[in-house]
Image 1 (spheres, rainbow, N blue to C red):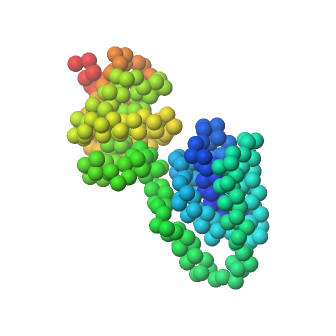
Image 2 (tube, rainbow, N blue to C red):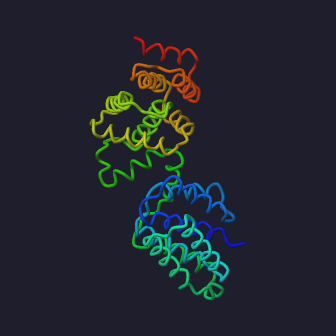
Length: 302
């Protein structure tokens, strides 16, 4: 069986190939995951690493780093054959090969073909490790894996950091408060998204809560809200968000926050049974009592 480094490196390069035309539909993502599922030896942790690449477009410099990682991982002729065969399967998966996809596939194949696997049999383990470290610093390209924990535990924080880039000063908060803001925006959005349709009133309520609670400019609060809402449209583990928010807050903050959840739910004039039950689930993860939950609900009527 091929080594695990090769499997994961190859999978990442295949994801980069899928992003060749900078647009991947939901159906294409599912088809891509189905193809990658057949690669042997991918662990749950490996799938988390792949998700961080499937999540957003991969630019040429990042694709080049992934290619160099694959180059380092290929050590035998069998490794080369597996890489070539799986690459062609992906490119042909939807029956149509765009010029952009073919160009990227040819680039990847050229890299694979250029590897002299005989040399690896003469290289010691120490040299292989050194080569791998060098390949990961090619051209100073950012490595998404550094943010893997954020991607898993606080997806909205991860997405906002990528959106803001050098403009991170637009959110004048400590890192702890920035993370808490992102967790809160995610849970507020979850309640608004219960019926799969976030109303204008609900979105405005989220923006206002974020603006007042963290003393943000309205445009900044709107950006945070939009990022959180889009994350739920794509699918996100809100139980993890609830658990992380519990860790980041004290009881007084949690009680105040559950009131805010009810405020969002009632923003369109209709506090539904489904919205109430969703808030109940969140309150339970936040370890609030039934009385604290009821008091928060009654506060929306005052």
